[in-house]
Each structure stands twice: as C-alpha cells, then as structure tokens.
Length: 307
Picture (spheres, one colour):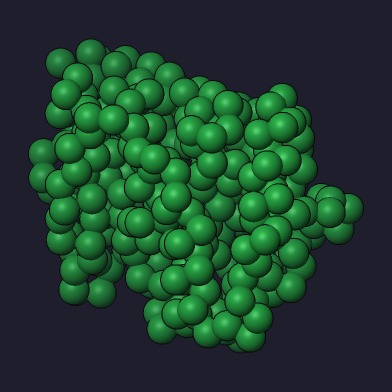
C-alpha cells in the first residue's frame, strides 16, 4: 500500500473540511473544489451533451474518449455525493482514467440532486441515461454501468429497473464503495472509524434524499428486498477502512446467492472512494485499471457474441 501517498491525501483533506452549517449549494461547491484538483489523463477529447432526464427535461453529461476507444462501447458513470452533491467536475479526472483503462467511451452523468429533487429523482435519471444510450445506437451488450458511493447504488439499481421493465441488460456493472445499506445495519457502519463518512453525514444524506421515507425501499436501494436474479456480472470494490465496507461485502454475497456472477475486492487500508485520488494514489489507478479490465472483458465477449 502507498501509505505515504494516502497519508498526504488525508492530511490535505483534514485541512479542508466541509464548511460548518453549510447549505447544499455550499457543500456542492466545496466538494467540487476538493475533487477537481487531480490532473486528467492526457489526450482525451471531452464532448459536452444534454440528454433526457427522468422527468421529461434534460441533464448535462460529458462523453470522454481516447483516440483508441471503441466507439461502440460505452461506460455510463454515476458520480458519488450522497445524492446531494457531486458533478461532472468532481468526477472528470476519475472518468478520464477509466476511459484510458477500459478502452471505451465514458458517459459522465450529471443527474438531479436532493434536496431540490428527492427520491427517486436520481434513480429515474440514472435509468434515463441508460435508455438514452440504447436509443442512440449503443447495444446493451456493449454498455457497462458504473459508479462510486451513491453512484454505485445507481448502477446496480438501474440494472434492476431495466430488468423489471423488460429492457435489454448491460454487459457488466461495477460499483466502487457503493452506498447500499442506507439503514446502516451492517457491522462496519458501527465499528469502522471512517475518516470521510461519519454517521452524521449518512443521516444528512438520507434526510435530504429520502425525507420521511423508507430507506430500505427498493426504489432507493437494491440492498434489502430487490430481486437480484438475472443481473449481469458485477464487480464490487471497497476499502477496508470505510464505514460502507459491509455494504459491498454483503451485496456480493446476496448477488452470488441469486446466481449472479459477482466478485468483491476489499482493498486493505483504502478509504471511501479512494479512486477520486487518481493519479496521486497508486491504488486509485490500480482500482480503475481493475475495473477497466473487467468491463473490457465482458464488453468484448458480448460484442463478439452479438456480431
């Protein structure tokens, strides 16, 4: 583990805590500023788009690519932020390295945020992005769904909703540090001293996105009661030093019990959404490379089979 790199990152984060008594808008500005410092992978053209959202309007998106990317292959990426903050800006660098490692185009999606747009707005937008890809000529067999934290929830939830609506299923799903156990029932929610995700922050996210609602509802998470059968292969990655560790570990077990090909890697010593620190953290690049290989393998197989 690159202990010195991670320690330097944690020291920088400690010097830049979220503003106290902040509004959602102030938190968004802080989060974007904190996570837009990393340099992008070189030589990636970025195309700005407006695509349909889940409410009859549109949302911003960015299509990142490399000169070597297969234009038939797409990764739809849903960013982190507890359904309250996060943006194209905060996750642009991460998506650039994902494009480099996967050999696919990456669609970075700016879904609607709470509290202005409570549940299930983000989930509706996530599905709308997948429907847009299908309508614009991408074969389901050449699409992967991916996200970190709340975005990992959206990637898995979108596949469940697509299956329930009779849509063709994507080739693969990757969930990084997924936020799934919104009721905080897992042991790690109570035993891990997470440097980023506190119990209070989890409660804040829930209050913003699911005000007065059921945090165990399948409309906001596939973790508790959703039927997981028939989903495409899933890769989960989670840090050993994060409150949400058991979200991924338990989800992998439930997926396997439902007959889904699922794998969960617990990265020793890593913190929540450490991939955001690429390229300053070796494990961040290694994680995205692992995800890229998984996606490319399943997309190649699916495309070849469909040809």
